[in-house]
Length: 67
Image (cartoon, rainbow, N blue to C red; front, top):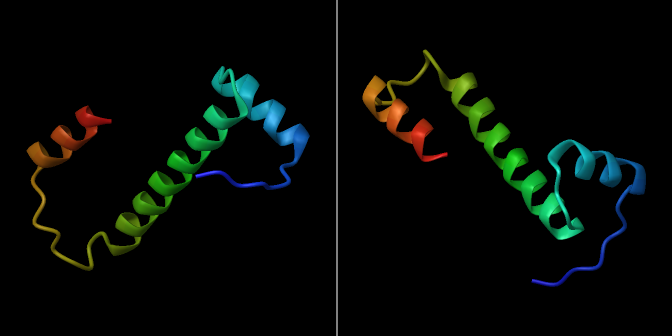
C-alpha cells in the first residue's frame, strides 16, 4: 500500500542507523512490527495474573522460537 506521510528525518536516520535498515520502507515496516509486538506484550502483561490464558511454558517457548 502506498502512502505519503511526513516523517521526522532525524528519527528516521537514527532508526536506520540502529537497525541497519537500508531503505526507508524497511525501517518503517520494522518499526511498525516492533510497535505492534510491544502493544501485544503490554496487553499480556496487563492481563497477567488476572485471566487464565491456558498457555503452557512449551507454548511460550514455541512462540518465542517462531520470532
